[in-house]
Image (cartoon, rainbow over all chains, first blue to last red; front, side):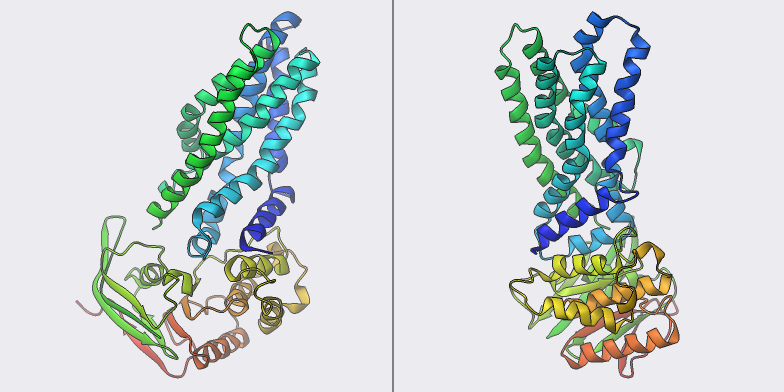
Length: 222
Length: 208
C-alpha cells in the first residue's frame, strides 16, 4: 500500500472507530434540523420555503463541529511532526486527510438530507436538489475548514477560533448552495446557473485549501 | 556520511534558545546532547529534523542522499509517541512503516522488517491489542519499533529511555549499537547515560 493510501485508510479507520467522531457531525445535523420545526411552529408552507436554508445552515455547523479532528489531534499526539518530515509531499498528505475527513463527516450529511427533507415538508424534487448542492458544497466546506484547522494548529489555539476563521470564508458557498436549491424549487433562475458557480467554488476551495493549509503548517512548525 | 552543524542558532517564541552551536557526527558515531532543562536539547533535535526553523548557521549532511532533504533521512523519536489509541499495536506500526517507508510492492523487505521490529521490542504477543491499553513503557517501545521497521540513517532520539524498564533500556542500547554498526548515526538528548559505550558528548549551556 502506498504511503498516501495508508494515510487514507488510517484516517478513515480512526473516524469510524469508537470515539472517532464520524457520527457526531451527522447527529448534530439531525438535531439542529429537527429542532427548527419545533421553534417555528406548524406552518408547513413556511417550513418548505426556508427548508433548504435550514439544511444548509445545519450542514455548515455540523461540518465545523468536527474540524478539530482534522489536524489538531495529529498535532497533539506528535503524528503531525512525522507527517511533516515524511518523504510524501505535504500538500498531498493534507489533501488525503481532508478527503478521508469528508467521506466520514461530510458524506453522511448528504445521505441524511432526504430523511430531514421530510421533517421540513420539502418536496422530493426539492430534497434532491438540496442533497445535490450539499454533495458539491460539503467538500468545499471541508477544504475551507482545512485552512482554518491548519492555522489554528499553527497558532496553538483550538476550539472557537476555527469557527471564527472559517465561517466568513464559507459565505459564498452558502449563498450559492441555497440559491441553487431555491432555483430548483421556485425558480425563476435555472438550477444550473448557481449550481455551476457552486461547483466552481468547490473546485477552487479544494485547490486553495490544500495549498494554504500545507503552507500554514510548514510556516508554523515550531 | 557526516552530519555537520555549524554556528547554529535557534529562536523559539521570540526567545534565543542557543547561538553558535557547532557539532559534527560521522557515520557509526553517537552524539549525546546533555544539559539542564530548557537549554535547547529538544530544540536542537527538532531543528535537525526540520520541525523548527534555523535562525542562523548551516546544517549539512555529507555523503547523504542528494535527492532527499536532511529531515527526510531522519527518524525523530520525540516526547510524544505518535500513536492512535483506537488502532491496534500492529495497525499503528503498519501505518507508520507504510507512510514513512513506502509501498510493500516496491519495498519487499518492509513487511519482514515490521514483524521483526515488533518482536524485537517485545510486543509481538499483543499485536492485536488497541494501543489505548498500552502502558507508557509499551507505548515507547512501539515508537522505537518504528525506527527499526523503516531504515533511515539518522536517528534523533529525545530522551529515549524515558518510561523504559531496565530490560527495555538494554534492548534499546542494543538497537542503537546495531544501527551504528550498520553505518547509521545517532543524536540523542538525555540527562544521563543512555547505555552506549562510545558516545561523544555535547554539553549545552555550561556555567555562564
